[in-house]
Amino acid sequence: MRILHTMLRVGDLERSLAFYTEILGMRLLRRNDYPEGKFTLAFVGYQDEKDGAVIELTYNWGIENYEIGTAYGHIALEVEDAYAACDEIRKRGGNVVREAGPMKGGTTVIAFVQDPDGYKVELIQRKAA
Image (cartoon, rainbow, N blue to C red):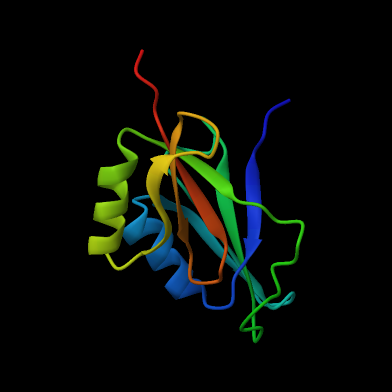
């Protein structure tokens, strides 16, 4: 078994695609409209689906926002340098909601950014080998 994808419901697919591709640097892997079901699925990621897990952005036509709820935490991405990643994300128009720095009670350097729908994405700095 392996993890295929994580699904997020989004209120504006184009805005979300811009965030994940232009700000976080993922690629749009595939996109399909389902007129009978009135929804569109778009898959984004850093690698092909056969090589690793990706994110499925689900746009239900006509629904502009969702309540995230109290159970959702975040998606985590490994980055070479969390400080530089925050600077780059900010330059590209992204929303850094927790600046890079050591996690509370630890030494791992993390940061958080927020996508247009309010989902949090954690940036975890790669540890030196």
